[in-house]
Amino acid sequence: MKFFVDTADTAEIRELAETGLLDGVTTNPSLIMKAGRPMKEVIAEICDIVDGPVSAEVVAMEKEAMLAEANELAAIADNICVKLPLTLDGLKACRALADKGVKTNVTLCFSANQALLAAKAGASFISPFIGRLDDINIEGLDLIAEIRQIYDNYGFETEVLAASIRTVNHVKDCALIGADVATIPPATLKSLVKHPLTDKGLEAFMKDWEKTGQSIL
Figure 1 (tube, rainbow, N blue to C red):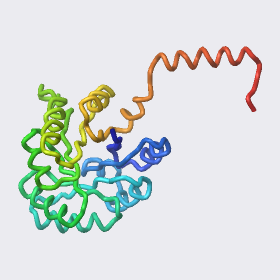
Figure 2 (cartoon, rainbow, N blue to C red):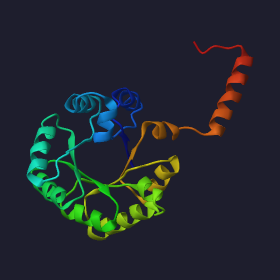
Figure 3 (cartoon, helix red, strand yellow):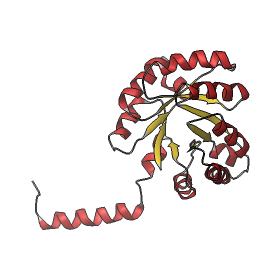
Figure 4 (tube, one colour):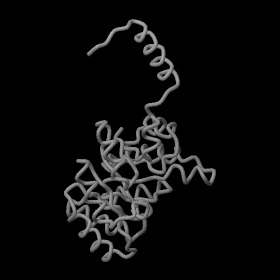
C-alpha cells in the first residue's frame, strides 16, 4: 500500500520524505489555509520535495471553471494530481482531464455508487472518507471493501485512496482490505512505528550495552 501524507506543512513533508516511505501528498483548501501561504507557492514547494503525486484541489463548482483552474494547477509541476469534487461537473471535468492524460483525484466520496461513477469517468484516484462516515455511525471501512470489490469485478484502474484516516488501526485495516493508498495525517503516520514492546526492548538493550563499557566508534 502506498503512503501519502495529508498536509500542506512542508516541514512535516520534508521530515517524512527522509524516511523513504512517502509516496505522495494530498492537500485541500483547509490545509492550505492552515499553511498560511499562497497556494501555488506551497504546492510548488511540495512538488519539489516529493516525486510522487501531489493532489492540489480546484475550488470552482462548474466544469469549465474547474478545467481552467486545473490547467493552472497542472502547470505548476509534472507530478500534480488535480483534485476534483464528486459532483456531476466534477466528473465531467475528470473525464476531460483524463482524456488529456492529467492525473485526477476525485474527493469527498461517501458511497460505492459514487466511486463507480468516478472510475467510469477515468479518475486516477478515488478518495473515500472513512473517518467522516464513522462520525455518523456508518462503518467507513465497509465502503473501502465495497469499492475494492467493485473495482476488481470490472478491472477499473482507478486507485482506492483511503482518506479521513483517524487511527493507526484505520491504516492496518485499509491495508488488509486492499486499499491502494492511504493518505494519513503526519502524526498518525509517525505513530505507525510505535509499539511499547519495541520501546521496552530498546531500553533493555541500551542498559546492557552500557554495562559492557564498550563503544562502537
